[in-house]
Length: 331
Ligand code: UT7
Image 1 (cartoon, rainbow, N blue to C red):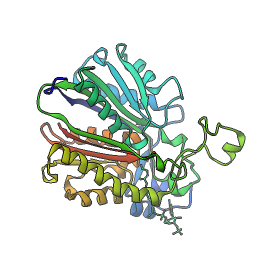
Image 2 (cartoon, rainbow, N blue to C red):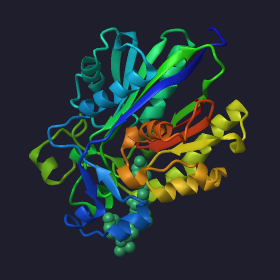
Image 3 (spheres, rainbow, N blue to C red):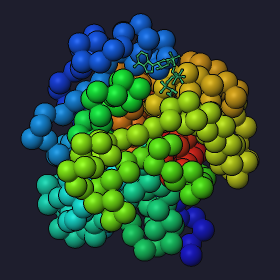
Image 4 (cartoon, rainbow, N blue to C red):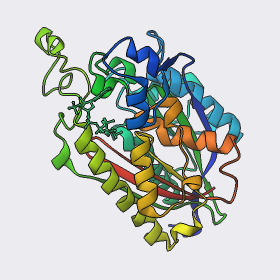
């Protein structure tokens, strides 16, 4: 293994459906209020894909932007990783649809299931594959169409999620930049579907009429428990990469945490000691887009000039499984 070989993000892209659903729109559907949603979550609106739009459609748009911004040919891509829990179909993989959509004929393609931590799991794999010399160019995508798995009569969950996708071209470089440290973890003791997950639809509980009647094919969550776990696990994960790279929190230019709830984001920033102005927030506009949150946020931060070449960025996320991850990246 060549020690001077690094993996860096050379281009990003994101795509959000046009349709905006506001908290006021949700007031018409369930017993909730704009005030409750803003105060408890920080969410103001979210994007919802049209009925005929699948996850790969959003991913292809995002990937095209990432490819353009990285200034590469789609044929250069050797591996496509799509992080999602809302694949177009169980199989073929969503990544194969993306490969077709962007014309990346030379790429291997596969999906990655790590819920909201999925994009950072994908970055970690890309980092390892590139550092080992196996590949030079990997496309990592996070994309979700959550509106089909959300129970639109359950006010405790339906107000939280949105649809969207983001993509990053990850390439080898000899320059001392890119991914400085990466960490992913999991704890299957928390795999109970009622904590966070969808009970039915897989081999454990196939879809039947009874399953549909009981809405067991829809997302379930114990929000309060998940909240506590997120506030504990994300700072711990972030500390791991800071220690590994011997970087102090004061050196961080921008913290990009998973966008699930403004209160969680602020608690994570506070626990880490990152001042509010260095914490990226867009949960107000998009809600929780699961595997897509951190890469949509990075793409926006770059376009807004809040993440610039040379900046030190800290990503941290957690999700169902439980799964979690953190990445320290010199842009
Ligand atoms: O990507 C990772 C996945 N998800 C998360 O990270 C989400 C983590 N959890 C959360 O963000 C928060 O727990 C929620 C936003 C889901 C809930 O906030 P909370 O402050 O933990 O509220 P709660 O669940 O303790 O509920 C408080 C009250 C309850 O009423 P009672 O029992 O006090 O009368 C709920 O029934 O708020 C009620 N409630 C609502 N009221 C109006 C729950 N959802 C709503 C709603 N509108 N949408």
